[in-house]
Length: 456
Image 1 (cartoon, rainbow, N blue to C red):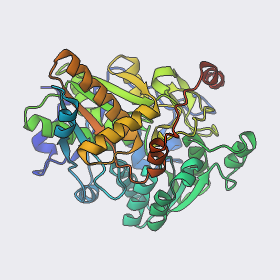
Image 2: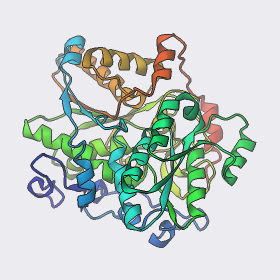
Image 3: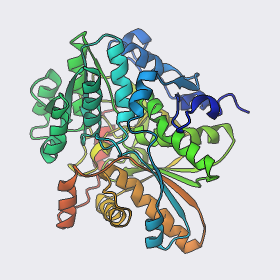
């Protein structure tokens, strides 16, 4: 047996909740390329990263050899409020589609934040509290990460400063108020409260913002105050590590009932949900113990995997963050003001980018009107109103199930239902009113941004 195979009896409690996170990089032959100091172009050291992130999170970020990292008891106690999350067989959807496929989804929306983001939010807040910090700063797109982090900080008594993409600050006032209810300060980005925000506003007057803009502002605020550190809801290795609880629970439940997924599908923006869902399954694939078809689904309006370039790039629009080698559309790329929510990041996780580059998974992009068609179809038969991000995975899960209907194959499909869409009613309203359109960036748009990639 491989040393990295999941030791269930050791790492699982009776209620089937993991007691350790799984570090997928330990099983990767080709490790993700290191983060680089944008000034020296050398790999960042623990000391350099510790000026941005909490010390223990930096160690998790750089750890490429430890397969299992124990989850602290304090975090486990918090997880027990909503974990293990449900693994559901979509019987009603199967019946509606008249497909021989068996469809399962891992539902991460059964907590007040409404999404999977809480799995990493409580972990990052815990390490900040343990380090004796006053608070943390971050960005948020559609608001799921901001809601989750504000909850975690309130629970632990930490200050929380949030920069939310301006588009969603205006579109989702109730999501904003959830964050404020939990004590967070919420600023629309780009703003005039930071140097980088003022620069972006000068260069892009009237912009609706992007995750890259908000990241720049949050990082600037944190590095200027030694009592704060920056935390991130996706992209980073540490985040994928924390989110591995999603895949671990899914695999445990499926193994218990003798279920083997043929196809695993997750929405992809920065990589937190997808990386967490596929982690143990990808580990088996890397070790040659099993095989799965793994599909990353991204919005056609922000197609990092399917139309991006694999290269070193800044993770933020202000170009003050470390350089990461990833599939990117360029840090200057600002997506159209669509309803893809947290999937509007210009790049992708370095871990997932390496796996995709090495051919261990595939990717596809979908237009938002077809995404909302799938969302409404799912809501009407399964009884859950899905988040727009999750609905990208639903779209492709339905498409795969319909292919099985055509061929008669009885495949088993697993997808990640990352959260609920009850704060996304403006988007649903536009779809129902026939006011939603599909914007797909031209090759020229992407090429103009890619041309500005840093020379490494």
